[in-house]
Structures are given as C-alpha cells and as structure tokens.
Length: 139
Image (tube, rainbow, N blue to C red; front, top):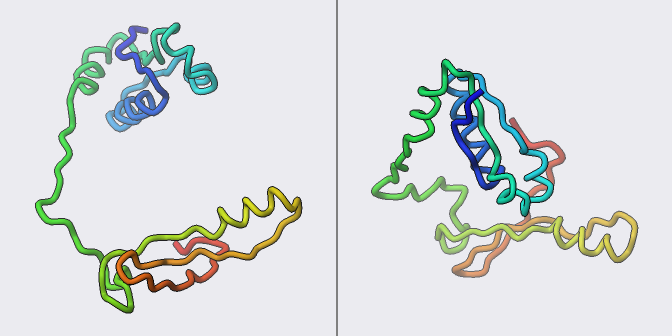
C-alpha cells in the first residue's frame, strides 16, 4: 500500500482520513496511537502515515493536495434574539462555567458538591442570568 501522506499530529491525520472517507477511498493510518500518546516520537517516525490501495493512490493524492478555501461571509450574522442581553440588548454574552469551579472545589474536599451553576454574563453592562440546569441536552 503506497503512502499518500504523512502528518505531524493526529488532528491533521484525522482530517485527511475524513476527507478520504467522504470520497469513499479505503485507507489506513499507521502510528496514530504512538504519536497520540507520545507526540515527540512524531519526528522520529516521520509522522503518521496515510496509506491507500495502489488503484486509489493517484485520486487520494489529488484529493489531499486540494486546498479548501474558507468562504467567509461578508457580514457576520448578529445571532438570534435569545443571544441578546436582556438589559442593554447587546450581542456580548459570555458563558461563565459553574462546573469548573465545582470541580476545583471537589478536588480539595474529596466528595461531590454542587454549588455553582453556569451563568451568561454580558460583557457590556455586566448583567447576568443563570442557565437552567439540564441533565440531558435537548435534541
């Protein structure tokens, strides 16, 4: 099986693998686990190897050589009305993670506690509101 690509890190190799999957080309990645665990070995191994069948090698090389240009919108969408601050009506909400504070506290205490819930805070006026607790994400 000819090698059609070598990748320094696992993320690049997975993107190339997904590209070939989408095109229906059978392939294999070699040394993914080793590089994933010890990324410093990537240079010694000359990266993660992507191999395909001989018949698909030329098509795979062509697919991997294409550079996809990102098409950015000329004007960004301002978002929906639920992303507006209810006080100043600005699109400046940011998430303050309650579970991170809880995990930090649980590390020191040693038993599960739940004190903080996540909040949405406006960067412009400082108004905040609690995010309702959901155990399962809505589909």
